[in-house]
Amino acid sequence: MLDLAPDHVADYCYRDNSDRIFLRLLDVYDGLYTSINIIKCLCGNNTFVVYIDPNPTVEIVCKCCLKRISVYDLAYYPAAVKCPKDNDVFSIVHLDSQSEFKVYAIYEYSDDYDNGNDISWCHVYISTDDDLIEIVNDETS
Ligand SMILES: [Zn+2]
Image: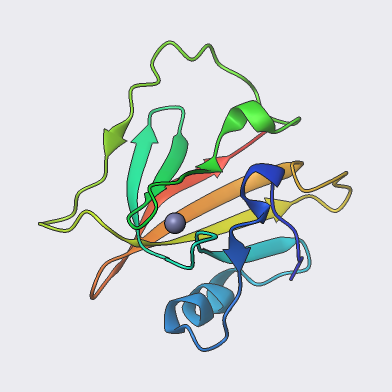
């Protein structure tokens, strides 16, 4: 697995082999050019309110210190086809009555990537009390 992530999110990425969802994602996605991450705020909290728009762009807000963290945003990636962002209306992700989630991000790179921003694919998952939901499965380029 690569120890790498896009610059806008790298400070918030960590791995934890005692986290059962992390291990589940590792089982599915582990590879030479894949980076699998749990997102944690610098304040130590790891549950977030999650916002998504149709591009798709994912931003999350720490429920403790209210810091806003970008998890996926095509504007940052050199390989991305940028569409005009005139439809970037964020909606909040709710599942049943739950609106705060742990967030997992998987960034895939090609074998000739230049840096952490040079991703080719992204998956974003959120975990509820008893399930794991994929909210982004996007080929970046
Ligand atoms: Zn925080």
